[in-house]
Length: 213
Image (cartoon, rainbow, N blue to C red; front, side, top):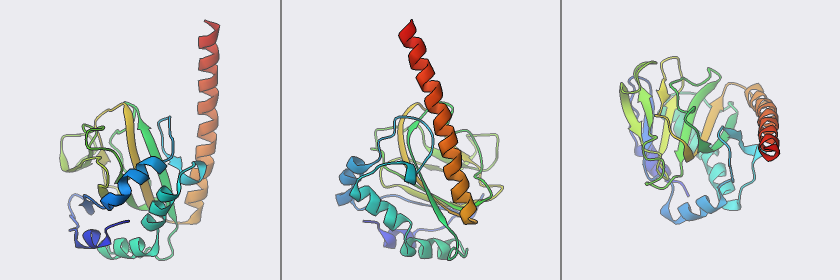
């Protein structure tokens, strides 16, 4: 399903931080099935995989993204020991104008890997930018099209700034992180459950208010 040879051949850019971009990472024969099996997500935000329902082809994709072959290649390319590091998967389906602000990932995330599954005409202006500074979205070292099968991997750190222009609509991306320890995964799952509860509460109140008027 995944073109590991293409990933192995990809160059790692080291400035302003270590990253690589790999277009066409998923074999074309699987792309339609992945789209069909992609979890149905109607809200913005990043959702732990365990909280979602997906089809078998999507599950196979996740298995290959988080498997030993992928881990070994990433560890070698980014010169980091991932052998004992837990892996965490989150999935996004929708984006609002509040998303995409410039940020670095949590220090507990050692490696961030993003796989986009959008068609080339979808959310084309919401390209992830790998930045040289924390305050200028135009000062970027690379721009990543959110098109199907485009993979980007970077080593997290205090200078790994990234973000994208405001966008509202469907923007599907799978995020895989190798993290410092299992507690990070547990905290993420708890955080999501609490966040989901309050989002449902606010949504239900909004629907009730609309119905009353």
